[in-house]
Amino acid sequence: MVTTTWEIRGSNSDTRVTSPQPGVGPTGWQQATVRSVAHRGKHAVILRLEVPQRTEHLPGQHYVIRLTAEDGYVAQRSYSLASAPSDPLLEFYIDRLPDGEVSGYLADVVEPGDVLDVRGPIGGWFVWDGSTPMLGVAGGSGVVPLIAMSRHAFDLGRTGLISLAVSARTREELPYAEELAASGAAYTFTRGEDGAEHAGRLSSAKLAPLLTADQSYYVCGSARFTGAAVSWLQELGAADESIRVESFGPSG
Image 1 (spheres, helix red, strand yellow):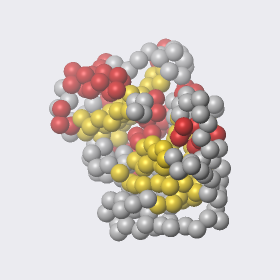
Image 2 (cartoon, rainbow, N blue to C red):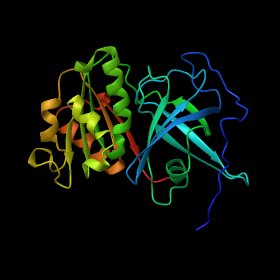
Image 3 (cartoon, helix red, strand yellow):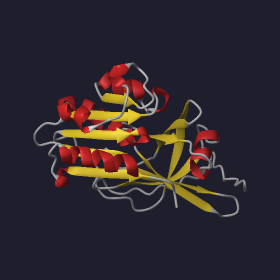
């Protein structure tokens, strides 16, 4: 295995900022200063970044984070935003993947004051503006964009418009587990934690009580999870055009 040494830019580096107009998509790479690093066990980290004059995002959008090695090698990955549009900082929950060259660096090396190249916000399909009823269904780290939606609903005083159903193997592996529980989200753990009420897997039967008229459906997780979740929603009568899916998997 080849070890790559990424270039570390400290907070005293020159800052070059692209300043797109409000409501306009990203025009190029910007520099983001890491303001806080919070580790979540061995496998994840929450980064909060400051991007001067950034474009306000919508919940469900993502950013690309780019790393450049000393020899010029570049690697980049996309990460969903967990922060609401009102948050002055951008928040990312990043799973540390086995042999993940970007996630491993972000989880193990990055410190407050470092500067990262970012581009965003990106995405116009898997977004929720807080004006219509929605049900979010997610597995594992797929909950991250739903957290942004939940926080946005809270900021707007419209928590009654949003329902969430999420699943993970264990409570430790569920991002924002305490926040989700406090928000009233339905959740299950496939390894049977937290007693019978939360044991097992999501299913159409568990989603049925959460469906209401005129909802949009936001499904996020692995390709296997999203395929199953779409089938459950269709079984319950959800129209195909009302279902929005974001799936993820290993990088190429």
